[in-house]
Length: 83
Image 1 (cartoon, one colour):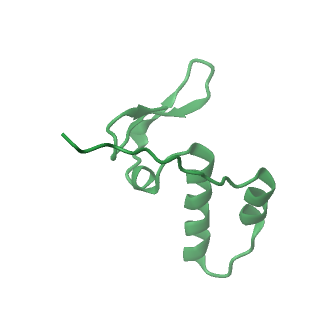
Image 2 (image 1 turned 90 degrees about the horizontal axis):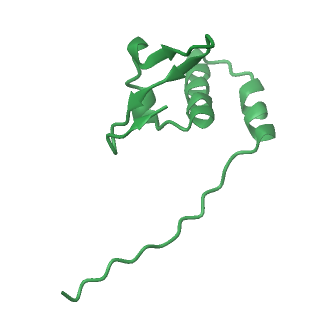
């Protein structure tokens, strides 16, 4: 009865487009680091968590009416569907 829930706002910093471009253009000499960078950028640009990206399968990618592609995925953490 004496328990109270406190919500503290979280300040999130976001990368600017310029910062994303710098990371994307960075030349790395180790193939594994290239892959890590690419997955990181994919997460940044889609807003998906790494845990969700690591479980993406071909069936999660759908073709829209206009021919563009979208990801429809049930998230691991919240179980909600994201597009």
